[in-house]
Length: 225
Image 1 (cartoon, helix red, strand yellow):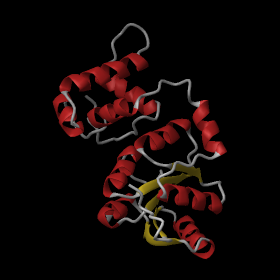
Image 2 (cartoon, helix red, strand yellow):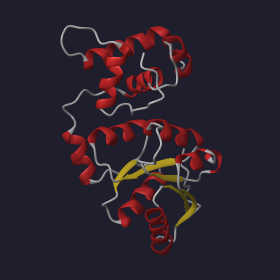
Image 3 (cartoon, one colour):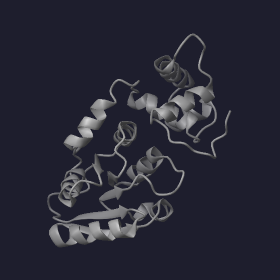
């Protein structure tokens, strides 16, 4: 569903960024140079944004490093579930992190080295439900293509099963609305992709490889079992 109908010329934007200079600087630039874009929310932490999920607007500009331990995937999917589109804007230009953001549903990943006009373009396209990929990000993603790749469903399964949302295959199946056999099938496929040598991957070993590959983020609260 598009959040920016043709009949309404203004795109409303929220910025989630813990550095005040960057947050306020981007907001002021957009308001001065993009009259069709209105910055209506400014949040200095994920906790602040999460407390206002129902009030978020058309597009959320989201930083990656917000000083918490909430996985980027979880933040993006929480925002998407409440309605807005997501544009990630970060100093992190790592193929694994970029892949994680795009796979989770972000429509753009903009390095903070990019000009503010690039963010503006990404916001406009996101409001129309369109993906926007810069040359720098395309190059970074291409550099990581030799690593194991997961389908969107495989990523969902491991994110729920190993990311702290569910502890068992039955719980994972319930959360995702699929069968337990479906969960088993996708987990087996993921294990094959990350298998090295003859020893079968334990749950912990698989999670460590998914973290190192950027499919899951470190979470100290996650049980080491």
